Image 1 (cartoon, rainbow, N blue to C red):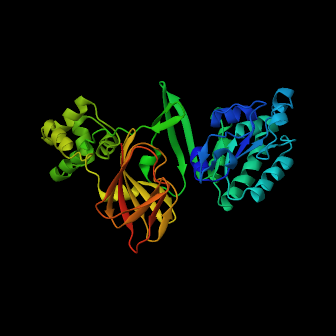
Image 2: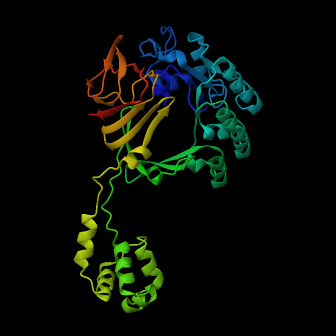
Image 3: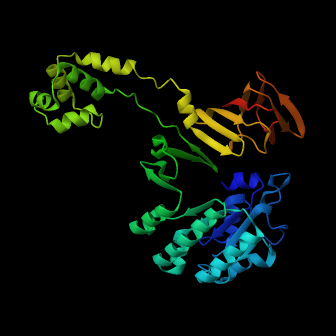
Length: 398
């Protein structure tokens, strides 16, 4: 989030309660401060129109005078790095003072993105869960109305269930991170305005250095035995109660089975098939034959919206690790000032419909329907559709 925002030449305000400024810059920019470093932001991280990524990174330091207790080890950072983009809050334990400082940043850096690290750190300093909740219920809606994006980090075991539930009522997106059997997972608990059930399933992710990748969900073959059993039962004119009595099961069990809510044991499955007079292998083979996990309908693609901005949308067709296929749609007279995807790997782009122009290494090229380009590195910085019809592109990430 930080990397992409800075690459798009957008301001990021990092509100820090838990770490020293030195640690933050080391963690995010892999940059260490000392007496000879000048300017204080990383000088080699290029972004935007050739500017420095650090120029758009504003650090609101609530640690030094908070948990850091104004220790000289932390204060000396400001002796050699007097940077207006690193702002030390003198009284972070004073909620009113902290709120005023935070609100003043909106005038200096309008339309910024925010990261609050973290609500748990705020509560540790403020000493009361109620104060933290009151601040959140004021600031979160305010930032939302200002049209910004804010990330709020908290440690789930450090807060009460009531506190977390109340936060979920206010915010638009809630993501839970957890570890199970040495594997890392992310799960969406709330996605405001989205009804795709797949999005709410746990997704495994991996961290390689500073790169995070989401692993695709492996879908098991859907046997749909319950639906077929229900069809056979109704054709034979047998009620759920009658079938349950024949196989010594409850009507509730038969109902759940027919709705594919439970999977029967092998003996129960064989008893039911015998009562209905059907060979079990027929149900099994038909279920496997009807599996169409290889078939991707256009309706499914149109529901997998990956990114959307003014005049530009991108839909995911399929993703498998680092490899993916996507459809990008650029509306007429639209200019996109970035690469389509966040990852900077190899890309093959084929023009399905319309015409587009791209700017790469300062040179503009025009692509018409049927043309394609292949990038190993240095992806285009600008895409344009100057025509009167929308352009559609197939993007294959290799």
